[in-house]
Image 1: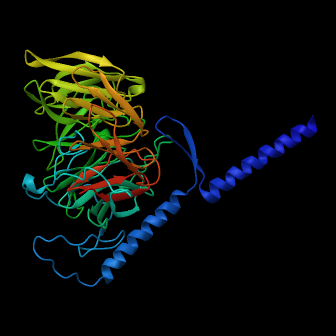
Image 2: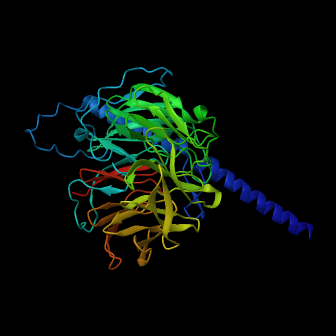
Image 3: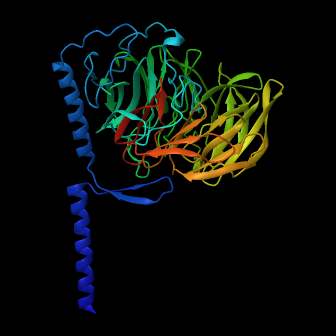
Length: 497
């Protein structure tokens, strides 16, 4: 008996020692997918950051030593550079942690037409629909042309794109860093960072909220509430504040995730504090303009929409869908929408002049609600509600009266008017999707790219090819036919033109 126990003890000790060696020597770590299934992986965070910093330094050195580029003929496109190469743009500037006071005034507002089309989370309307030049209706056997691929810091933010520059926020060691990249080459133009590390065992480290671009200014929100307005051309600080401190609010379990919304010269954010669940700051000065409501917030980004003839800000908090006044944040309507642990992530979709589509995972399902005038407010009532579409970590899109989305990781098509299921097929895990024409651009949870025909008649996958490596929950972005994808370790650009 004692001999058996000694052998068991020795085996356990060897197993523990082996795990320690793998952890310390090879970076063994545990992560979960969108269905909370555990996975073991190798790789030290320090090694990843070492590789990232080496690649960025190589870019700068290549830029410094590159011969001048001959001028191109007006109107002719310059050839795409290879992954990791530099262009003749100014060398990147790494910004030190700035002081609390504004370093420069905001530039004059630029014409809206010059700002680009993907300046917000999930596009200009925050609806996941790409409306620029057509993309290819099919892909070659190897997939769309890869323009570049390179390391990136951790985090779950997406990109916004304006004037040929892509912006995101990422974790680099113990700092949250806003970074600007050349869209055509991936070359880093500038960075701006501050000391902060949000770490969460299930979701991973790093910031979550996608920055927002407006009138030459980039508004970036860190996972612990740090909000900064930066000049988009240089990364220079305009103003800063912390929205959780201002609201007297505690952080959410998975961090601040909602992209700031810029409307009528105001920056709308959602700290979730009592009396300050939603807050508006002046976009130029950072001064608080209004605050409202007592809701615990969730992970949905505010949206500017017009429903039932009323221009309003719509979002989903931990317990309900709401619409508030742009002018002062006054509540216009609400509809109960509670899930386990108050986890609402998916963006609502406008599906008619007075109708809104809602969806959440964790067994909740979907609903179509209709808003009708009721005095100086609006009344919300369900048109239908069922479990045919359960968007867990992603958001759906709308085309010709049909909603397309990932129902707990399986692509589905639902009639927006009735809630009836048209079809369900294709397993993509908890990835993301955008709509371009009648094509769904899908990134799978494992980083693949897929092209699906958006038609209610049947499920029709046209292509599925490798994209980037690793768990991919980040929403892709697209501008001028170039698709940007990223996760916590890699970023890449693909030409869909």
